[in-house]
Length: 624
Image 1 (cartoon, helix red, strand yellow):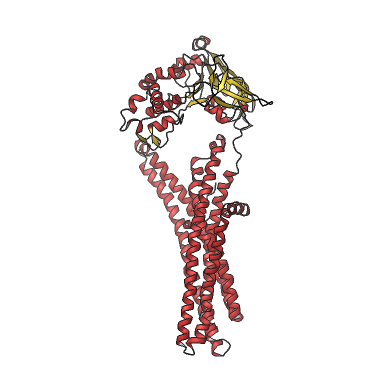
Image 2: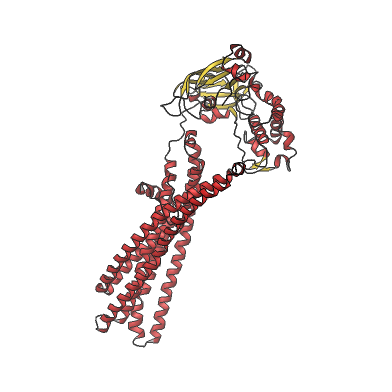
């Protein structure tokens, strides 16, 4: 995806639909109508002061300097000083207000973008890299901030300035205005050509820079491999080629960028000299007074500035629109669909065995269903999960799962084995409704999971993934992530259950030890133990273990085996494992290949069949 670049890069990526994107961006800015009104008022005052100040030179020279009226001159200079002071105050005012508006606007955009990402389906994140999504919060937000801070008001100011100066020049002398206009066309033509070449080479520079940065990152990450295979010389040769290509593109880009200001500056000086010569001749012959000539020449120097600044500011604005378009594209994505109405509630059991909803945590849960007549039905949460004729594909053209039929009664342990890509993890993702099935049904305690609100469904499920992710915060905070209202005692109990307590108490600050960098100061096994403790504190009726012990050494695995057994007690458990020794006590083992269940049964039953599971267990066939 293209990225918008700020003014500092010298280039920009054009938005695909500028009008639509600008409209959406202005809706955010338009929330501050009162402040914008003050900004526009200050802009007009500032611009008027600059234009009026130059015109005021005419009466100063004609009425005071030439006649020698020094007291009148002093009064005139005082008035001129007041005009410029008023303009300076107005400029300061709109600049400060625009900073407030811009920061408030980007804060609102950043907030809405973050909120939106919480509502997007998981498949969206599967199809977009983390770096690409992060660039929305960094590069794209930054370009919007730069444009609103510096260019939004600047464009309006320069347009008003250009029109105002042009009108005043016509008023002073239409003939000299034609001379200046002709030179302006030449200046604009030259500026456009130089800018076009500069932008082309800056685009090349950005592309080459991305290649070089990507190569350097890859080489740094693979430094151990490079040294093991003596690949240093080859790595240096490849880097030199890429670096030289970047140098050439950068040299061309900055050469043309560096030419723009000197060339335009000299053309402006030539325009000034030409106008001065013609105006001087007209003044000598009596067709032009001296005061008007001085004012006109002042405008001649000023009129090229709005053009130069507009060209630079438009680059920034186009970059901002490109960045805003990428952000708004995310905001227009379809939210995760959730049509469920059944919710999960805490309940307590009455003496007669009936259930009653309560706010207190009792360890008992129920599905709350509101019937058509308004009555409420509470269905006990037991953990009965069933798949019936389930078909699923990440895209409709290719089915990943085909005709999956299975059931897990409350308290049963169901294991999945098979090659990588067979569809094991996909089955557990369907239970969570991270993805929607193409056909068939999945029921939970007899309820179609599509009728259950996703938040409630996921609250009833505990998941321990192969890839652990720890958040910046204390050890206790990371365990409590499974249940935010867990007490310190419950956190410690969960850690003990996962056999994480023994290593936690030896950390510098125990449970208050700060974890940063996704737990870089912990071993992979310790991180996984915290991951298991996080699931334990949630106390879910259904547990999903996706390669939960794959990152743990054999000794650590034995340490947590007892804790895992306690965790799985009286719970419905789905286990995905490469180590077949961890699933021998499963109620049923499903062997999945190419999206289909090809074998099912207990450990002993599958060994007797001497099929694929037998081959896996005896080492005749290895999981890939």
